[in-house]
Length: 502
Image (cartoon, rainbow, N blue to C red; front, top):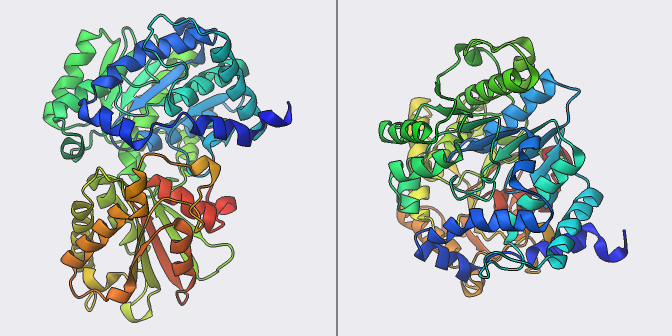
């Protein structure tokens, strides 16, 4: 491969396909209607790189969507298949990445190499350049970032001849770029987050309709327990799409007796869905006898205990600063933040020592401009207060819980530059320079906690600035990083946590 076809070059080319803030504003203003072009456009791109949709059936896909828990469900499912069938080659496609874009495309648990990513990337790029014939004149010559990476993933998995593919939906379901596999082996819907109703301006039935769009004729359709109005839509859509079956996955009692590899009580529901997805898949693809819904064989237990999913309720000891512990959770919805707070403020974490001997605590937080930061912060503080009362922590309150609070952008370095894989164009430049979102968050914090010391509240232009604040804290110090997976990825990069966190 020539020097002009390196991994860094692939990342640069990929970044040129990012949708900027103005484009994202247009999609939001359209009410999402622009997403309806995703499927015909993706099929056109797939044809231009030499494949037909039916070719994707060879990937043996487990397709998973939901508004929360879909990534964790995919991680659990991946671990189960690899434990039960160690001789298999198992592909996993997820988003977003934390530090390197190649994390999105994994084989047997590991991101594909930089060399492989660059090779598959430029094979797709060159095929699109050489085949400009388009059925729809309005289709751009190159797809946007996520669609392009999805094409690279399909090409990589087909080239590597994987035995099974766990495919996580990016956004929604019906119009998602991953939803062009004609016949996956099994499909699943994780929890429908109620708070998405306010954020996305959609009702629960509308969200459920979108998610159920991954259901396919003749393919088993699974879901966890959902709000009643959402469940009705999922069931109706399953019937309309003539799925092979429709199953509601209930709690598996045995999951309460093991320590899952992913922290948080909410993970038991994701693990239960993963167990049923794997059971269905192994029955259909490997001829394994279908197990009872609540069965948990030893291989499954080992797989669930061994599951790792970086940046989600993850505790990391800083390798260079023995007294610093990072609590990383890319929680970015009200419900996921509630889970995050319950995980962090627990007897095993923040409440493991008496108040007068506890570590210092720092909050590093950011969220996208389209979300209501004040609502998020209020929910976090109310959750902390409730848990402190539950655990009878006298002398502590939500107002004194954190010793320092940092609101920073997702820009990686103090120089104003991003690490190549972490480049983001989804915030208006003038808002980024003015730290608009971060100042709004700080204002909300001051309103919620007027007595919080001004010199302990920081609005900073980069992740590196935030890490510097943490480094100045007396040790021991516990650092909660939340609100954005992009922020978590930046922290892992700048704080030197890659070897222990990924």
